[in-house]
Amino acid sequence: MMSKRDDLLTEFFETTSYDIAKDWRASREAAEDPEAPDPVAKKLEDILKWDPNQPRGQPGNKGQWARVGSRSTTNDKQADLFDEDDRFDMDGLVKKYAPKKVKSPEVEKLEAQAEPFAQAIYAKAKADEPAISAMMQSLEGNGAQLAGFKFRLKEVGSLKRKIAADFLEDRFKAEAKGEPPPSMESIASKMGDAVRYTLEVPEDSYSDHVQGAIEKLKAAGYTLKPGKFKNTWDPKNPYRGLNVNIISPDGVTMEVQFHTPQSLQIKEINHLIYEAARETATPQKVKDRMNAEMVKNAKGIRMPKGAMDVHWD
Image 1 (tube, rainbow, N blue to C red):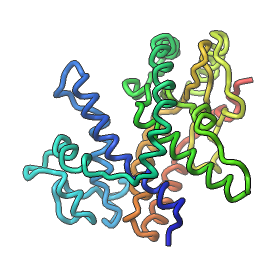
Image 2 (cartoon, rainbow, N blue to C red):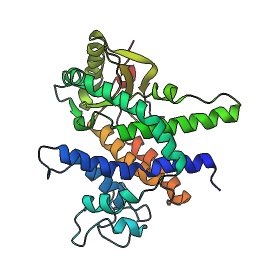
Image 3 (cartoon, rainbow, N blue to C red):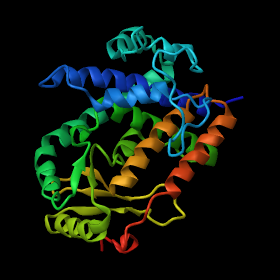
Image 4 (cartoon, one colour):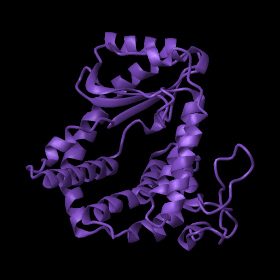
């Protein structure tokens, strides 16, 4: 039987797809071309089509995707999200399911408490983003490019959910230790990715380019958040890449990920598997298999020469 802590944290997890759906609608309405394909929509489509009970596909495939609209998926609700001629109906998803996602009173209360902090973080990030983005764009060149640049700002909905979930988890930890609970403000102050960027760098020039980018950031007044330099290129790590949380000259805490094309691709594949694995309807045996799949995928990532020598100091 799941504990109250697990129940509530799971509830936060299960709102992810619905929030993506609503964020997609908002981003589409704000786009210059309302009909342009949107990576957020594709991400949600992939999550919903993933069928962990299907056998593996041809060598090189990372699992088996159910046919869009097929009733062979493990969740009939997923099949209902696609219309008869196999087109992904995002508007139908938002209209039919997102409004029906009912949150418990406690989760609603926590998110309401977190919202003012999320709003303040977002407002600060949005105001400073143009200067930060200009700096990040200056790191491009010689094959290096910013990936997912459109999604550099984390939305208020995601921020408040993250603050509330972290607050809940830290509160339970404090209770278990007999310590005073944390404040929502203290949790909000730890948010490190209100603005986030991914720099994709060719494998053969990765180490030199990334080190050069770090030196350029330092020279411009960006500082490393203590303990937030994570070089996980070591083959022992299931996640490969370099992640840093840094503080802009104007005080905005942001996340920067440095990837090769291969490590970024596998990170995105593993994220989709992770989303499916954490669904409560996914059997534990399937979760174990999917976790093993993520580890296996990561083992195939080539480590660029000199990647472990990249540093901030």
